[in-house]
Amino acid sequence: MATSNREPDYAERRRRLIEDLGGDGVLVLPASPEIVVGRGLELPYRPDADLLYLTGYDEPEAVLLLGALDNEERCVLFVRPRDPEIERWSGVRRDPESIAAELGLQVYPLPELEERLTPILAAAERIYFPLDSGRPEVEAIVYRALVGSRRLRQRKGRGPRSLSDPGVLLDELRLIKDKAEIALIAEAGRITVESLLEIVPAIRPGAGEWEVEAALEAAFRRRGALGPAFASIIASGPNATILHYIENQRTMRAGELLLIDAGAQWRGYNADISRTLPVSGRFRPEQREVYDAVVRAHSAAIAEVRPGATIGAVHERARAIIIEALLEFGLLEGSTEEIIESGLYRPFFPHQTSHWLGLDVHDVGDYMVEGESRELEPGMVLTIEPGLYFAPTDGALPEAFRGIGVRVEDDILVTADGHEVLTPGLPTTAEEVEALFS
Image (cartoon, rainbow, N blue to C red; front, side, top):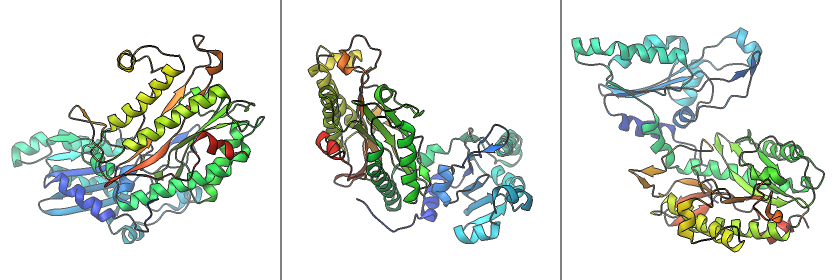
């Protein structure tokens, strides 16, 4: 497993982004807002991934300004000021001075944002700002700068001409993970693997999906994680055929499978692992056939991961083995090419084999470049997660297959000479899984 004690080099990340911004671009990056539901109930805050990537700052309401206009590098963070009355309810806030000392940034109180930001925007040619920021007060400042730019350009020959999404630049930077990021993802994976192994005794006939969820997320917290990276999927029996089932309200029954798709979050970075386990400790024959097919697809897809291979080729390898299994089961007929062309496999395998992983569970980065499947490069981290799902209501299926859902998933790093599994140590083969219940 990749390990490192190196802390993220936020200054180097900002330097690279400023280089991409050039001498006429400015990034204005607001933190995502807090979510309030009902009558003033605040949900736990999820730090803005882009802001966290560039600064390590994880509190709400902040705004980052980044650019290098007139050969003067600007990196300014605006943060919410101290407010004793609000702090009485939601906790003590740090003052701008202490934040500046900790992060090595120029920091100002948020009420000074418009005064300081407006003249900088007026000097820029290009503004990078997320239009879905959820921060209307910041959007208004940027909008006024754009509206006033025509008159400014006519008189002084300068002013913003265009508005672009920050992802145009940031997504490419974030797609390739540095050593510190790889270590953080690996640690999230280690916590997830250990926690999944710990909660196996909770999987038994008569227990509730909610009990497994509670045990798993408690295991995350015991190991220092902030909690789950996403809503844990604890899907027993027919629920395993629902790809994003998160209700976790059903009682497990003997002879069924339990599909767990979950991950811990560690210092902003995420793991994403899936395993499918027999509730009674042993696979039934049809379950075993399906499970073995998914494991073959999982292993073959991982073997495809290396620099120069495409993410499309990884999916195609898994898909070919899944189709081969469906033909062996007698559930499809025809050639593999015909089945792919017609999409007949999609009811049983409706999703892609991989997604990027990092600060977001479904992390940023294009999967297609200039119309072609993206080539893998060292430092990319992706999931490998083939599956097979047989709807319980599909009367065309043999009864023994109905309601079976299987997914097996691990997190994979592309290395200079191949790949590394960042989530090792979790049983994968049917024999290894059944041994967990012995």
